[in-house]
Image (cartoon, rainbow, N blue to C red; front, top):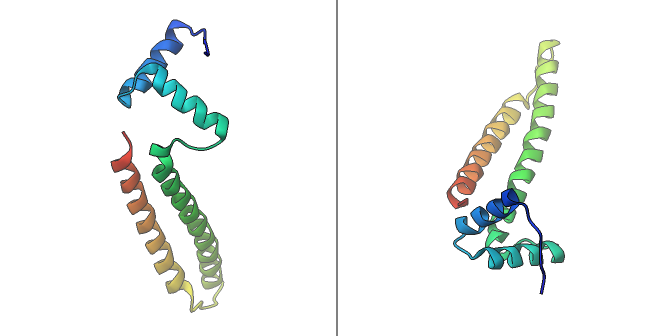
Length: 111
């Protein structure tokens, strides 16, 4: 048996979190503590973690595309005509659309 001493504010925060997930406070605490101890997300959050991983991958892509696009624009401004400028612009637009889709998916799944 585990006993915790909580302030009134801490107890209220835990109760509110459990209520949002329609669980008893002790059940919510047990699930959350067990997941933290094992270093794994709670099963009901696994899909959200997978979506977060996809968002982070897309962010990395967008950052790399942005760097390349900036280099292409710098070359264009120096008088060189870059044949890849349109490709980078299209890739950036596709990546932003992908991020928008992922953000919407996350918004729909979050409680």
